[in-house]
Image (cartoon, rainbow, N blue to C red; front, top):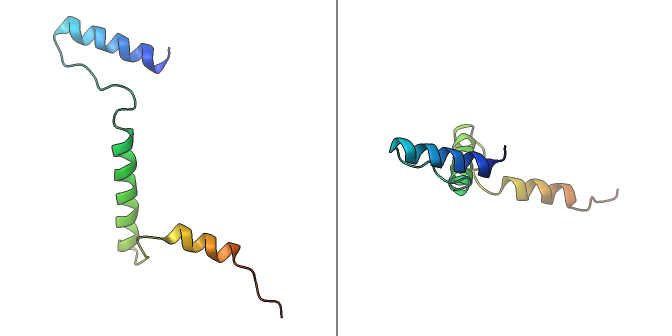
Length: 69
């Protein structure tokens, strides 16, 4: 059963029982991504690491040409 079919079945059952409908699939995905980002920033601050730009700095360090010598 796909996510859409399950959602439609849950919506049908909720209407039969007079209950509120469940949220549509994917409706809260963006909120979840934002919360995860904020949580990771918070954990970084608690650990004493920079909260922003860590990935960009790490990539720049890896991609920077090394001096010969």
